[in-house]
Length: 220
Image: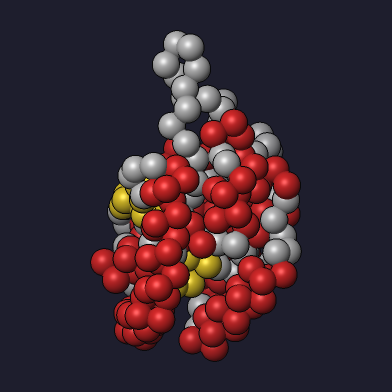
């Protein structure tokens, strides 16, 4: 049976919060010119608001509001409904995603205690009831700006592989591993590896649950 959201199975390591605060403060100070330039470009090319905000599950599945730079327009069809994502995502927005610049505002989430620098990526609230009990263990730690799955294939691997990497990180979490993941993230972003064309244009295929009938989290 899947744990209830809001009840993490164990307490995150004490060192992790101190590391997150220090790293986020340094990163915000160093990257402040980049943040300012990207903010101006987003405002000019995509309009307001500059930041995109959405509820995501955090520690124990508890919801928080994630912050990102906006990457899509507000274009709608004749009936006033938003156009599909791939039609609203501009080349500029795709560049922000490809280079992960759209993720920089999440440093504010780290300062607030909603996220960590390294951890399983925060996905969508509607995925919570679709996880198996083992997959739900990814919420035993705060979600991260980057994570073990992101340096092991990013959007080029399956959901099941991503979740397996997330749970492996939960079990192996350590300061040396976090430092290694941060370094590998920088290399991955500069190389642009693990990002499929579909992910650059409209995001990964949604997670629809586990296919095995024996899995208690599989949808009816």
